[in-house]
Image 1 (cartoon, one colour):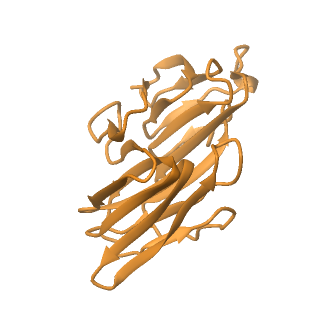
Image 2 (spheres, rainbow, N blue to C red; image 1 turned 30 degrees about the horizontal axis):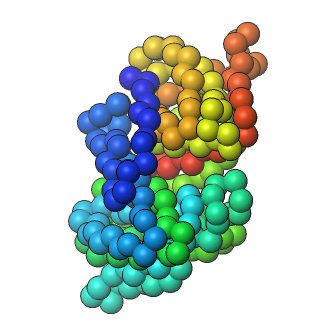
Length: 222
């Protein structure tokens, strides 16, 4: 099953994709939109949580029982200005965010885990070692693909410098369903394991992009 949803920014947390939906079996994905100086509190329960700020700055407080971290999360105006920062929150851990003067928009991804990895806040330009054994985060230009064949499931959110922009992808599911998907600003694409991207060399129809575009992709690796 190849499908996507459009995210409409709403104050607070918006749940977008959960296991059992759109061909996804393990990943949870949502977006957190915080107004200036507002707070958000949550618990990771039995999942590893990745927090990836797309715009704005917030203060992050993670943890209890010795597994703690605190610091600034996010230092860029938007995804087209500056490098990615991120935080990993281990399972069975609390976390709280306090948005800065301009507010903050944060992608939230979760995957079941019992890894016991430490809480971690990584600033712009820092390369994350594989502390979270179940999540890999990458960002790239819309219209590009992660892998020719996606062996593990993934979820990607797309943004465009001009909101009327779009990216077109040709994809083939593990069940041989071929689909031409056109992605717009704030579309969230579910990529089940076994999906194959049909690249320009494979067919006359090429993947195309209109306007400067960005994609953030989270893969389940374990």
